[in-house]
Every structure is written in C-alpha cells, then in structure tokens.
Amino acid sequence: SYKAEMKPRYYAVDIARMRAIMNGAVLVLGSATPQVSSYWRAKNGFSTLLNLPERISDAGMADVEVIDMRAEYARGNLSIFSERLTRELFYTIERGEQAMILLNRRGFSRTIVCRSCGWQMRCPFCDIALTSHRNPYRGEDKLPNRMVCHLCERLARVPKYCPECSSEEIMALGAGTQQVEEEIKKQLPHARILRMDLDTTRGRFSHKEILDAFERHEADVLVGTQMIAKGHDFHNVTLSAILSADQLLGSGEFRASEQAFQLMTQVAGRAGRGLKKGRVIIQAVQPDHFVVKAAAKQDYEAFYREEIVFRNRMAYLPFGHIGMAQLKGFDRYETEDVARAFQREVAALIDQYGGTFSHTILTDASPAPVERIRSRYRYRVMVRDESAENLTRLLFMAADRLKRPKGVSLAVDIDPWTTF
Ligand SMILES: [Zn+2]
Ligand SMILES: [Zn+2]
Image (cartoon, rainbow, N blue to C red; front, top):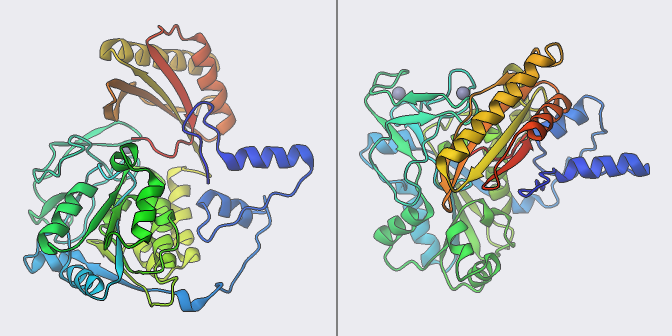
C-alpha cells in the first residue's frame, strides 16, 4: 500500500498493475483490510477475488471492547482516558506486561464532536469531517473558532449548541502523543513511557531503535501514531488501545473511514499474538458508528457494504477522482500568487475544452489546512472529476502553461492519501 510522497507521486499498486499488463504477469494483492477501491474492482470483475475464510490462528483473536466516552463525560470524567482504560493500564503494568496506545495519523488535527450525543462536525457539501490545525504541538482546551474542509476549502464556525441534541457539550478532540504521555504520567506516575511520532523519530532515535527498546521491555507503555501498529509482534503486549476512534474518523480525509477501519483491525489483530491473551480497548463518542462496530468484530464485509454506498453517493474513489496541485514556497505572497495563477490556467483549460471537462469541479486556490511546514508556505488547488485520465491531463497541461518562479515548487497528486 505504498504511495510515493516525492515526485512522481505514484501509487505502487498502479505501477505493479501496469507492469503486470505489460509483461503478461499475474498481480496478486493481499490484505486483511483491502482498500475499498481494490475490493470494489474485485467484486466487479476487474480482478478475481480469492478468499481465505479461516484466520491463521483464532487463538490470537483479542477481546475488543468499545468504551462509550459519552457515558464517561456524563459521569464527570473529562479526561482522555476512560476509567476502564486507566484501570487496565494499571493492571497490565502490575503484571509486568506492556501496553500500546494509538493516536491518529499525525496526531495534530482536531475534530469537533458533541460529547453528549456523539455528533461530529462534517462538511455539508463533502460529508467529511471538518478539522482545525491551528496549534499543532500543544494540547489546547479552547474551542477553535473556525473549522475547514480539506476538500472544498469552505470554512465553518463551530456552533455553540449541538445541532443534533441542542446541548452545549461541544468539544474539540485532538490529543497529541505528548499530551497523552503527560496524562499517563499524571495517572500512573511509575509507568515507563516511550513515545513514537514524527517528532521523536526525526530526532535522536530512529523508528527501529524505539521499537527495539520497547521489545526489550525498557518501557511499559508505547504511545504513538499508526507507525506503531505496523511494528513487530510484541509478545509481551497484552493491551492495545485506540484512544479516540472519533479522532480517526475525523481526520478530514475522504478515506477517513477506511483508514480508521484498517488501523483498528490491525491493532485488534496484533494484540495477543504471543501466548498471553490480548485485550483491545476502543474509546469513542460514536460507539455505534458502523466503522467502530465493524472493526470491533473485524468484519470487513460489514464495513465495505456501508462505505461503498458513501463513496458512490459522494463520487469518491473508485467512483470519482481528486487531483491536488500543491504549491510551496518561502514567500507567502509569491506562493499564493502562483497558486492563483495555476487555478486560472486550469479554469481556462476547462473553458477551452468545454465538453471534456463539463463535470469537472474546480475549487479556488487556498492555503492548505497546515499552512506552513518547515518555513514553507503551502497553497493548493483541488480538482475533481469522474475520470482520473481527464484530471491528469488537465493538471499537467496547466502545469506546462504555468509561469512559475524558481522559489515556488509545484507537485500534482492524483487521489492523494493525505490532504492536510
Ligand atoms: Zn449532541
Ligand atoms: Zn467540503
């Protein structure tokens, strides 16, 4: 499932598929949690579906428990840890066993939920969760003023009252790994904690060093983003927790459900691979969300049945495609100007070739949800079309026509994996 983050932004499966066609070879894709678009292809005769109905070993199945965080809040526990999770953490460490706590992909986007009924703030046009990226490295209790949609760039005000249940219990979810570490230290001062995220792996310790240290039991708890889900088989890990399924579902990507399902089932499948029985805890204000329910049962079919309806209704992959042109530069105004110029080129091409692009949707040039990374400003232009070929042609023609100064870079990504 590799997607290149550097130019050219190819998706490994597409390249493999092309090479298989060119060489008359057979391509085998294997996954316990296939991408919705791959599974759709298999179901619709574009490839052959082969099932492995039996798990390798059912003894490894972990007990999955979904904790309704609405009930926690109602009881007055406003912490990011349910009482159950705190207790399980305590006993796991007492027994000399280890625990893993997972957060979403990057750990710094925030989503708005109602902690009384579980409503989540979504874009009315794109039906994906709205996010705010204002304060990446500090846990902030204050509500953000405005939320943004990753796809159509529309801004929305955070409501004072929940539109579903009229309560005032609107909250921003978005604990970072650091905040989680501090919270564990507060509750369990003796716990030895390791943290793995982009910050820690970019620094002194590599990905592997952290995982190795955890394997040698130099820490009781490993807190991290999804990177840790793909780690080794830790035979002493008997407790895994998804801190907030809502945060996974609220990543702001149209693939949020797929990514959340994959991560949750990976964790559930991984816990208890050793001889000891594993336990998985999933915390959510939406315990009845279809993704949470399907993941708890490790039921891919149930997940797929609902997700494909959503994709079809919204014309998301595999029923439609998204092209993202990203412009980056050290000078904010220059970068913004180039993004605007690029948008005008795309608009002109759509006009010029009217018929071909009559269903193409083009948004205005706008700053990315994370406006600046390592001193570079980021702007982008989003385009949607039913045909990936059309999109590719359109964006590359516009890129050719664009007069771009040296200081601004342009990257075109078809069906990007992240749009933050
Ligand atoms: Zn509500
Ligand atoms: Zn939208």
